[in-house]
Image (cartoon, rainbow, N blue to C red; front, side, top):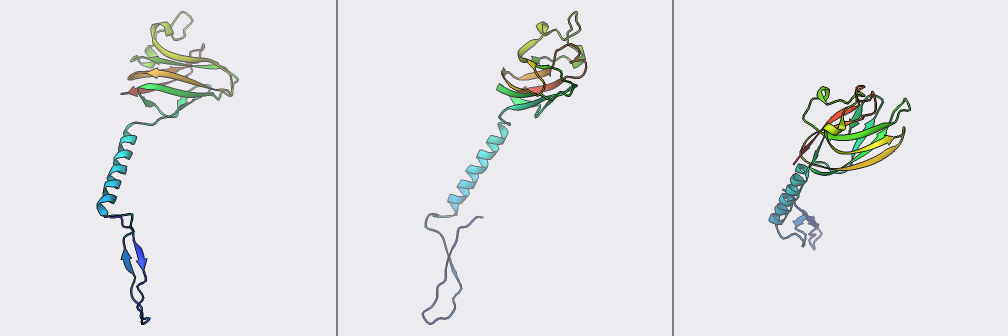
Length: 167
């Protein structure tokens, strides 16, 4: 139980010591107000934690991988802050596709790259130069997504990652 207390020295006129008297501050009427406040604050924290993390999701593109700061989000607008951290000087792209297919089952075109026309794409940021950072905001509905770099050879080198969106 939380209590707010003030001390009164309560000295007697004869100079004898008297133990301090604890008094409630005038702005606190009783313990029930404090309990209600703690219940409300606790409820707000629970509700906010259930909403999931908000803010941009960081995407780091290396020579052979896409790493996200988190792999889930709630449905709606999601912003990815994408940085090309390549050491080879390669450009990359960041393509968001919704699919339930396994990563080795995605359709390929004649050049051997993922056939984006046969998938549901929610947006992309192309030609990200080495060392550059760009943002991509997409409106995602619940489901499973893959973030891929679809430049020749990049997907096969491992430049993809899974991402899930819930209600």
